[in-house]
Amino acid sequence: MTTAALIVAAGRGTRAGGGTPKQWRPLKTRRVIDWTLGAFEKAGVDLTVLVLSSDDHRAWDEFSGKPGLILAEGGTERAASVVNGLRALQQNSIDKVLIHDAARPCVSSDLIHSIISALDESPAAAPALPVTDALWTGAEGSVTGSQDRSGLFAAQTPQGFRYGAILAAHNAHPGGAADDVEVARAAGLDVRIIPGEPDNIKITRPEDFARAERILGADMDIRLGNGYDVHRFGPGDSVILCGVEIPHDKTLQGHSDADVGMHAVTDAIYGALARGDIGQHFPPSDPQWKGAASEIFLRHAASLAREMGFTLSNVDCTLVCEYPKVGPHAARMREVMAEILGIAADRVSIKATTSERLGFTGRGEGIAAIATAALVKA
Ligand SMILES: Nc1ccn([C@@H]2O[C@H](COP(=O)(O)OP(=O)(O)OP(=O)(O)O)[C@@H](O)[C@H]2O)c(=O)n1
Ligand SMILES: C[C@](O)(CO)[C@H](O)COP(=O)(O)O
Image (cartoon, rainbow, N blue to C red):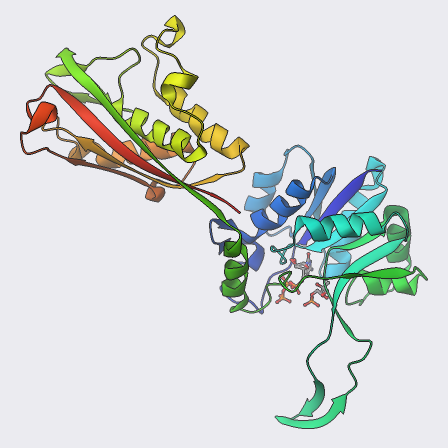
């Protein structure tokens, strides 16, 4: 059985304010859309169709050509966006499709799997929460009546359907439906109610961002790692520190290019992952690493973090030496390190201190570096 996710992300998010449509706005460590797509990726759906507004040019550039992802153009209403997404799946032999709002980034894998399983028994299944608050009617700021809440549910997404059935239902529908369950019911499909999740909120108004951040923060896996490295000086005319070559009256000696700062940051990332250290991944006894650019090590640590599902939140590195002076080169070092790590330069800190002429760094015999890395998995 092939299951697809259809994520509608073509809305303008006017009620959420803030100018940029809500799906492109940041939510903790990533954007709303990244959490939503990540939830379906984590749940292991086979294919995703992402419906984008034709106005969101940067999103089209960013997402086109990604494996397992098909793009479709949105319509003026949510239902029109869904129809375009369903049609974009037509050549893909899809059995089940889960239609989900990009604006619901807190959806869990458990809920996604419950919907997928329910579709074995029923042509349609959708999550909902029984209404627990009293319901009133009101006008001009006053209550005008009470509404019986028995049998009432608040609908959520993902709403799941057998693909052929929901495509036919949408093709036959005149439009104006609140959601895909309404379209399915209009076509006579039986829709099973699956218990929804209180945390599966839709970001609709400005205050919903803070709520979603609290929900996503609750089960966050935060890892810290430290790294420390020393290289001695030898004859030469420059040193490489955090990827930047600096003229000096000595060089740093080592098996690789002896970039002591980059080594400390690399070890901090391995440390946060509890996956050993540089020496374990790139043994000095192996001749292929002789004179190697340390960027190879740092790229490896950063990609290992990504493979293990972590986002690199920030790194902080302190170089300990009397000379060369690091300050004039720190901005460039941050840019170089940020590019290698695949994060913004404002998440990379490079600073320096002397050791007051004490010890081996104070005597100018070598440079030490100490680093911290923070990794986050949600
Ligand atoms: N023409 C539209 C309208 C909405 N959506 C998507 O449908 C989901 C739920 O809609 P809603 O919360 O109403 O989003 P917006 O339409 O963006 O918000 P607003 O009504 O405040 O402008 C969102 O993920 C939104 O991007 C869509 O793909 N195409
Ligand atoms: C589909 C939906 O999320 C179900 O609750 C909802 O109807 C879509 O949001 P809107 O605010 O009604 O556009």
